[in-house]
Amino acid sequence: MSFYNTYRPRTLEEIDNEQVRKLIASLLSKKKEDLPHAYFLTGPRGIGKTTTARIIAKLFNCVTPKKTGEPCGDCDMCKKIGEGKAIDVLEIDAASNTGVDNIRDIKDKILLAPVEAKWKIYIIDEVHMLSIGAFNALLKTLEEPPKHAVFILATTDPHKVPQTIQSRCLILQFKKPTMKELLDSLRRIVKGEGFQATDDALHIIAEFSDGSFRDAVKLLEQASLESQEITEETVRKILSLPEHQQVLSFIQYIQKQNAPELIQQIDDLKKQGVDIKDFYEQLIKYLHRMLIERVMTSDHQLWNLHDLRRLLETLLRFHQTIRGNVFPDLALELAILEYITTTTSPPQNASSLSRSSSRKQEDEQQSSQKQSTQKTQQDKLQSLSLEKLAEHWNDVIQEVKSRNHSVSAVLRSTRPKSVEHGIVTIEAFYKFHKEKLDEPQAKDAIAGTIKTLFGEQPTIDIVLGKKGV
Image (tube, rainbow, N blue to C red):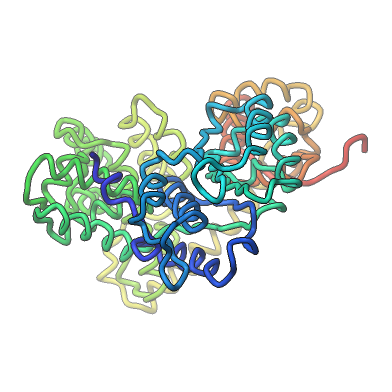
């Protein structure tokens, strides 16, 4: 059995995420009959929503609960629920059961009394995948549930679930675990399996998992197959991660604007089998830490703040492109070359500058940049009018589809409202659509599409309008 299933928390105290543990513990003060009949679990993937749903199911059906009301995790009912074998605890994947007939089937069967447990529990995972008709059928069931029924809905995309559904549930918002919580989870498995793992190796696994317990545990299991003594080198080899020095060296060449050396280093990384997409993200993370350090310490021996910010903005603008690109090395080269070729100030040896002269130079650069930005905004999109954009709006929607399918679908219910001073204003008619299009990746997809079609990059503004106005 995989590590993730073997070490899946069985009881409340085994949940490593403290915030989730407190949420569930808050339910223990009430009698089962007084607890909500519907729960809405939302948060990033791999964070433990399904595990928590099963523990809630145990909370209702445990035969021998602890004095605190916590499920014991050891009785026959708790074991069956943990293994997904309890007859009265049904786990449904909404991605595979999206239709109204699937929910109507639940509605009919839920009227039947539980077979072996006290409560009949329905866990619906990825609930946001249900159709409109299915949501309407589910709403009726949530409004008038049998006394023996409990619903637990889980999703990574709560904004896709109607408010009418959410309002009938107790909402449990899951946050990403802290680094300490991820490390505690990994160390528990290392101890249980009896192998060795260095702290550096576990830190890399935890950081690479991006807050997902499931991903972290899978990476640890993969590393354990390579060696019974997991080191930083073992993990970097498995993940094809660059060495710390490689990232640092790359940044130094960027600062020196040494394009030939940068191109050569990208080629060397490819030959070494380093995943360029992961290298790109490591580069962004490292520069982000540098930016925070620069802002917090005001150390003028570090990178010029303006240049560092502009480099990060350039890399982030290319980020969406590189993740789906079959030539990620080319995307990285283009991002770096764009930054170098548009640099307004030549590279300087920062350590040789005094604090006062550095500060003066930076103020002058920021003032110049502000004036340049204002002029650029005024000059932008002179060749694009609202009439022209409206005429080709369907072309924009089709082109966006190749970048982001869900954004393209939302755009079909919008219209361009104005094109002025480098800003394209788009009018949405539903709050959900506005929130979706206000997301940075959505705006990037729209702006990039307009640049592709009309040759100029706009700023995107989303406003809420009324149909027929």
